[in-house]
Image (tube, rainbow, N blue to C red):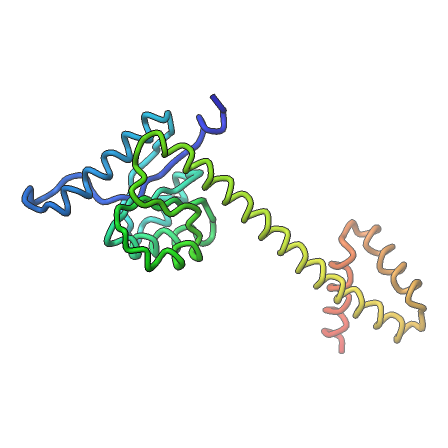
Length: 211
């Protein structure tokens, strides 16, 4: 069995199993769903580290537990639970999987836009759980890689514009050719152990400061 799967730390966001009113069929059904989900995780040898309520303390609890994946077990209150989870994982993104029996799919688009990697209706059969989580993890990793590539591309474009401005300033003030201005920036970057874009940015900031 894969070591990564064995080490996977999972937190479930779910309502309490205890039902105050034994006549409340809806609450009993939710509690049974939540119980079956937890049993399914254990049967798949997955590491369930905590079951938490979707409340204002969720962000701090997730920061302490550092789970690899968050499962939201919800039905009619799925939207509210998701809002708490999305807010709690905003600064430290994690794959999110939503299990529900609610066939109202009007908020699927919002859920996916919010970062849900898998939206599963009536999918609590134990044999389905691991493949669903594997797909969610793979999708999350793919999306994070795309975001990183986009961020790098934006940073590279910004650096290029900054370097061009710095070159233009050197050419104007010191009468250098474009290759000579670029070489001066490059040499300074090497001497100071900095990236070329950082040297250009500092130079422009200094010029702005001195006027």
